[in-house]
Length: 433
Image 1 (cartoon, rainbow, N blue to C red):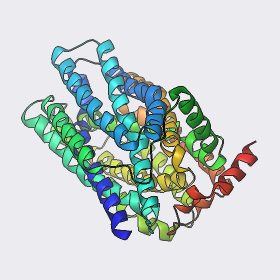
Image 2: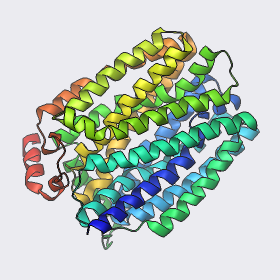
Image 3: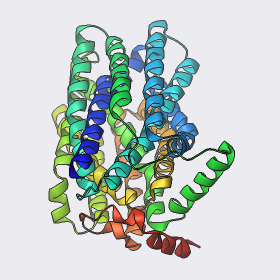
């Protein structure tokens, strides 16, 4: 059984590596790509907002696909959709298309990622649970994060230098090819373990039942609810903080076409992701509760964002970006483990998709608003505003901490147990009622 669990974890890590390598080819230059296509700063972040609109529209329906048809099917649909939408982005750049076309293409990109979001985590947790995994979820997610960090490091730096040596469009072409490879790897290696698709009698009734159950185990479950409600602020700020760093650093550097610098800056975030994932065991020893980790990382992130906005020194902002990214990376596997341990398998993908939906909803509002602020007052003040928004995460984490959920305790080998204990979940539902 141990070898079967290892195989599930290896497959998960492989999928993270190939998908992140593909996607991250353009992460270091995406904002520069949109500006080069003729969009203003506000329009560039509005295009990013339409990407999150696509996530808001399709997150829960695609989560239902993963919970009914299968996680593997959802993942394959995501890879195929992303290939097509990436190529569409490339065509729009070549044509200097109007903003409306970018909005549509961005929505399609969002659709592609929604097929991935809840399905990948749900596939891993189901597989580990079914194969007798004895480790903690924190450690499993941290392994994926470290592997993804190395993949992002290669992808972002490679994309930046590739754009420097050729043009801004070539990384998008390479990304489409690598996404095609992702599809092939998933087709060959990803098989649903610990999950059986339900026999479908009525698609409408199935969706209604899953959505009702996912609501019970999501927003009506207090420990889950408070972290879900914090997601709009955390996700909106993190999305802006990452993508605005590209033009902000180039502005401070004094050269708007040094794409390699933008790629290296994104690579710095990847290194921070590796460090954050590698620190999972240390974090588990230092903090007795997962909400303590989330509180500390959120507070430090707010301080760092404010400092980034108040300085005009390139190297200092570069270093602060690394600190901010480490905080985000250290919190991610902790938050994933906290939520997954409280969600039953049958509704896992849909609840996780609902969580992503709320985060994306925040991005729809926050990213273009901060982009407008940068248009009006420059990037520095927009980062100070980001810090204020980041602080709004803290009250929700404190409310989650007050619930004293079973998964808030220090990680143990029985992390998967709460998903099989409906009594704990029912108690939260009674309290909510």
